[in-house]
Structures are given as structure tokens and as C-alpha cells.
Length: 152
Image 1 (cartoon, one colour):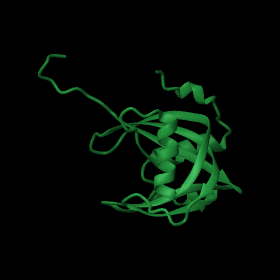
Image 2 (cartoon, one colour):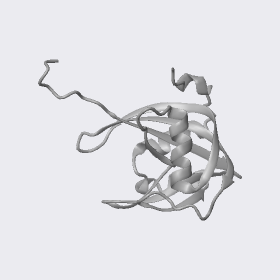
Image 3 (cartoon, one colour):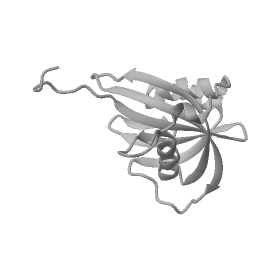
């Protein structure tokens, strides 16, 4: 690559798969195309580890404090229009909820959906990554968190 060429770099995102009582924690968010469903998810911030980012995004988007328990998977997707995403998904355990905490801009509400409800709403998923990560989680895919470790 010559010095004048732009460097390709995918958007690195994280997502949390939080389950309780047979339901998965989701968010309904407003984007240009309307209201969509997603896991609590967002972009990795500079100088932040993947696990910490997933815990932070969950709190910011849902008001839930969680503890990451496992790495579920890494997923690569190219959105229509050519934007590239690399998503790291983590299983997490809900610890406490602050219903008074303001949610991130664009987040309309947090909600708990059964897997069947989430699948039935597939047309409203923010991306195909939503169901793919959920399906892997529901299939029992769990790996040690140190597979996504941040090195000093």
C-alpha cells in the first residue's frame, strides 16, 4: 500500500447476550430505516478491551449492570453499501438494573424477548448478526473469556 492510499478498517463492535428466565435482553433502537431490534451492542472505544466494551454498552443501552461470563463468537459482515463490521459477542449474567438511568441516544427501550419472539421479529433485526449471535448462544456456544483477552 502506498503512502497516499486510504487504509481499510472494519467497524469493531461488541454485543452482549444476556439471558434471564428464558428471555434475552434486547434493545429497540431508532435508526434511519425506523425501529430495529438488536442486542445491547456498540463500538469498541479507544484503549478499551472487548469484554469491558460489551459490559459498558449493555449498561449504557439498557441500564443493566452485567458480568461477562463467556465469549460466544466473532462475526464478520458487510452491510449493504459496503460498510464492514467485525462483531465480538459475549454471554453475560444480569446483576442489577437501574430503571432511572438514561439510555443512549437512539435507544427507545430495553426489552426481554423469548428466542421465539426474537426470531419471529427477524425482519426488524438491525443486522443478520443479531440472530446469528443469538442462535450460537442458544446452541450452547461458550468459550473462555480469555480468547478475547486484551494484552497489556
